[in-house]
Image (cartoon, rainbow, N blue to C red; front, side, top):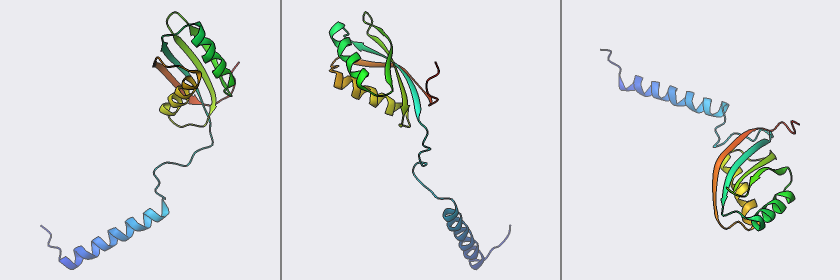
Length: 128
């Protein structure tokens, strides 16, 4: 076994510490990466219980006021609603869900809201 003196160990530790400090200054450390400026598009499938004609009219009117958001599908019998959101500046599915919850809250939805699917992809604009 190799016998290394305390002085040599101290020198090695100083060298490693210096190397770590230098690499930290070369590669900035941050909690999150800088936003890329890219937008996201989302298709959100959810179920609102209970859903009736009056609530649907409120939801549809509120969604209509939101830029780049529209209703793709609705079934009043089951309460299933599919929304398309485009040009979102959020970064996570949870953020998309928060946007949808805000819209529904502002529309007066007080019942149960269950997210069935949230599909998020980089924004590419209108594909039609």
